Image 1 (cartoon, rainbow, N blue to C red):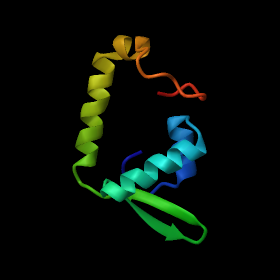
Image 2: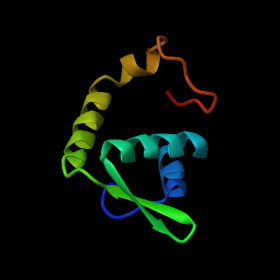
Image 3: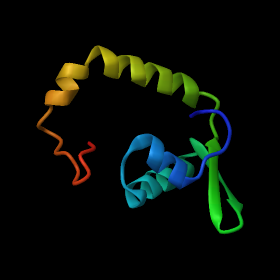
Length: 85
């Protein structure tokens, strides 16, 4: 899911969270330069804006796998209505 361009709808399908939540996150990521947004008609297409992001994602996935039980049991950050954290 890292290479190429994706729409927010693509990200919703991949992440399994709501469209508004994905759009807010993508907007923040674009403001920080982590992703780049390109208008294509009525849609925005997003791509990686910082070449370090793929390495960051690989590290984050590894950390999440190693700490899956603790992350799943976390009660300090409430789950969203759609079940995501």
